[in-house]
Length: 305
Image (cartoon, rainbow, N blue to C red; front, side):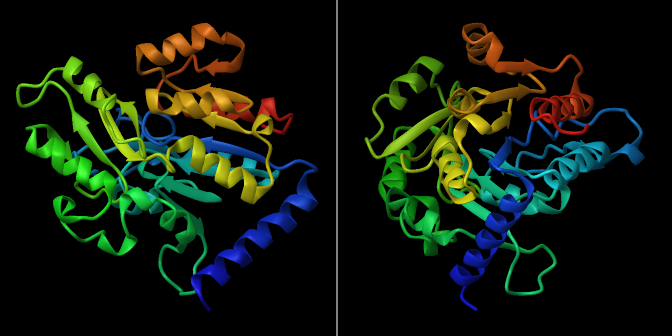
């Protein structure tokens, strides 16, 4: 069976499930770090799952209660979609440590995977290859193993230009995106803001923890979410988003309501100030905040907590 046929079967199953569980499809999108996964704490290790270290060497923890609350939402007809700026290698490494979901999106929207596979693999997912192929500025998908400075596509031409200019770049494990760090190699944040304004028109940029991520303009969390809304038959106003950082705000503004387990930047605070009724902010911290926001999502949809 070809992967596209398998994907068609998965989407048809979603459609049948939506018809039997709710009159209007709903999606809870969720970021990972700072949202459902947090820096390790001193709490009971029996109550949390510790993720393997990412490329930067950081571990994370996610509570067992978070898994169960997400599962309960899904059992009541709410689709759950992970959507993160994390690189492909980090997402794949963490799949076994994340809640079961209806889609997994990484690299700020560059790659989308759905549960299920035609092969009996240990961690069954199938990529939306048509979505990946639509990002022409990232070049062909078969160059993932090629060094970034040798890849084709506008994204990697831009990467090479910035590399030649002495910028500190991170493309390790990325396939449709790369990160530029400010205040490195003699550069300043003002310099970084200037280059974001000079990027080619077929590229987009967002901010995450003080660094700039570049990726195809056809990508981005909002575009990926709209793609999933279309496939799952959901209206934007019926969707919600658990999030915490700058690169989440475009999507957060476009859906029905945003739920924040944490607030990590001044731009997020500004977004909250501008639309206080649009955001629900956790009173707790860490994994308890994630659980609090999942309860708030259930209440928002009028579901059993």
